[in-house]
Length: 397
Image (cartoon, rainbow, N blue to C red):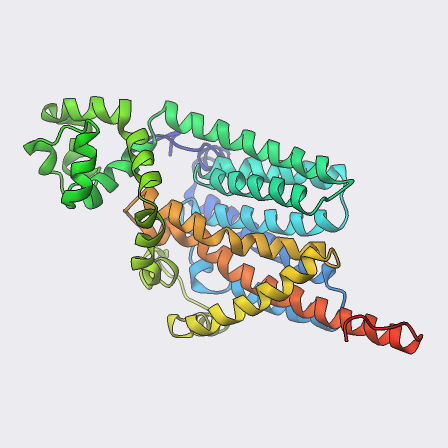
């Protein structure tokens, strides 16, 4: 396990841990497993501690730790891929944000930045979450006038942006993006005449050798995309103009950009193929199976409706500043589809695996919306009842 993967430079954190553990895969799997447990317990604690109503706290532990037992999460704990550490760092990231929003401190800020850095060092694509989050932080800070904390949050947004730029520059310099883009070329550009014509007009040399790659992954036939002499002219275009042409195509075709991924919505968010990544001997707990049942595709319409209800309620409390913590699940849900669009267009191979962190983000976001909305409603009712007892006019009725 080296820094250079099949498509160029790979994020170094997992290889570094692997080497520190004596290149023992079992030790790495155990570290992933322990870190996963600790991260989910930390998040459950952070959420429970943030709830004003004590009776909701055990419910928070049940929902959050229950989610961690579902097979889409638990099967990765001992699978040597980037998914386990990506999810665990994301869970820590959310937990720290929840604590930070309520009580800012230098220590929490330093931990947030450290976790964010490690999050990016696990997988380059994770940097896009920081970029999108930075944009939202800046907009929200300005729109709702988070004085006197505006500069503080904008400073964090700038740090997130810098982490993204460093990650993106590293990926570009090592041409890591080419392998993923070539999968898109093979499965979406070459087979579609209209899209192929667009790229041909923008300099892509469409030859018989290139068309023979249609439907084949970038690594097939001994990495023919990189080694076939007949594709030399195509490679020159790829490195010089491939990425910029693809971005230009997506920007100028917004319907394709945002609507096309919906055609594979079920496979992206409710894939049944992830179980094939499970390590030998993996067995799902009974509680984990229950979580899977209540997260099934058939219940999707109900979850969409409930998400809309909880989102609206939580947004009201967030805008009114009665519950600043409500911004955490709101932003989490808001970023789900933009990130899903990014993943779908970024690679056509193993989309369900690449979508996994976003699926976890969506399910966790729903749970947090539910908990914080219920907590805010109950707290508001208690406040109103107390005001009525004291003879204070109730402006909400």
